[in-house]
Amino acid sequence: MTVRPPILCALLAILLLPAGAACAEPAWDVVVRDRERIVEIDRSSVIQSDGGEKVAWGRIVLSPERAAIEGFASVKALNRYDCYNRSFFTLKRVYMDDRHVVLREESGLDERPVLAARNSVDERLWQEVCKPPSASDLKKVARAVTAIAEAATVDADAAPLVPLPRSAAAPVDVPTRERVRIARQARDKAPGSAAKPTVSRNAAPATTTQAALAHASVRPAIETGLPRPDWSYEGERGPDKWGSLRPEWATCAQGKRQSPIDPRNGIVVDLEAPRFDYRETSFRIADTGRTLRVHVEPGMGVVLRGRRYELEFFEFHRPADERIGGPASDLVVHFHHRDAAGNIAIVAVSLESGDRAHPLIQTLWNNLPLERGSDYTPPVRIDPASLLPATAGHYLFMGSLDEPPCTEGVLWAVMKEPLQLSSDQLAIFTRLYARNGRPIQPNNGRLVLESR
Image (cartoon, rainbow, N blue to C red; front, side, top):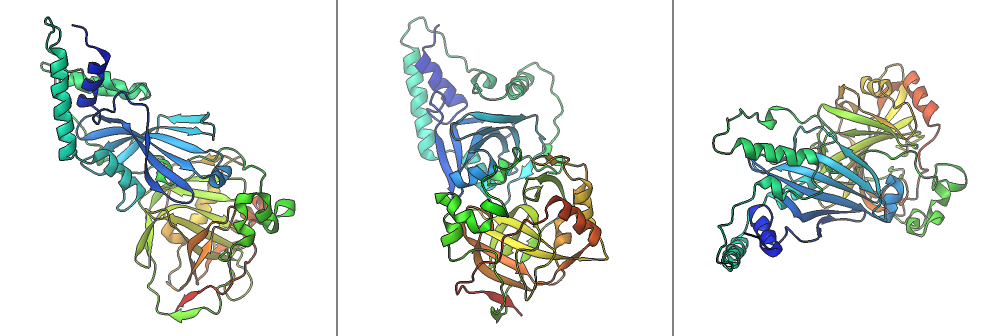
């Protein structure tokens, strides 16, 4: 019998995809939106694989301001989700410019699963892909099955429809190795085939920074060469000119809650100590052309004022942007975090030159990228918690990003106690970046809370 295209399309929708999605054009649905990004999912791409797993495309669309910084306008990722264990890993990424021209593709990524952290964007995506069908969905499927059966009997000589193997319904943009994998597993499960032992992916710990959809955030998965020469820390495009370089950067000059500031003379209160959830992790260190940025595995974070923020990366500035009761420290590390709603929180820890070398700093310097605009992932691990002071004293206030577009509404926690690095370690950073910190900005009467 000849199966007409509408019937085949409906059958594929019943077997593998949400009802009616098999032949639809890709339609991106918004999962999370904030000022710098839109996180979306293509529901028509969701396919059932095996063992409670599903495959789906998701993407992040950056704001024009953020795209100018990162060097790409959007990144699309094909993820495999484990619906039983709330984990996922990434099969492929595609980076595009604002005209949807592909800049580069990444495949053959590490396939060890990463747990979707509670209340994170990753968990939101996992829920969107893995949520069970509603009663309404099941009724639609039932109606579609009835329609298929009625259409199939129009031809008196029609033979019963034979369900297609799952591999036959894989979308054309699913990587070839994924289609082969699904087809092989379908064949192995067929009657008469020899059963093969299965190994749970959960046996392997999640030890990669490349498993997330750019961690479903504005995490720049791989820096794309040197930054565009649109702003700098000195000269004609220095901090005092940022607000006039682009209309969308006007906040850098006109904003009333800009960072950094001198947090002295705050209101002394009993502040709840930040609760850090940092642990040993693999890492990727990138020379962005403006600083050294360290990307870590997802799942770490901090709780500030009862809200959890996920750690995205940390980076260094010289001299320290913040002034705590006097001159700037030699160096500062900024831990960048983001919550599920897209709100940003930055924790700042000052470092001062002394006689003692800092072990984690030395590990980072031992693995510096060899060229500006490049990155390196070494076979060693670090513990970001070693860059946190022993005491919880801190200042808390609202500020902004300390680089264009100077977005405000950023929660800052500036730790009081400085750490130490050696003069040799400081000299290495100074050789790379003589100065990469923004000058102090006016307080403009903002409230600063200081812990006792």
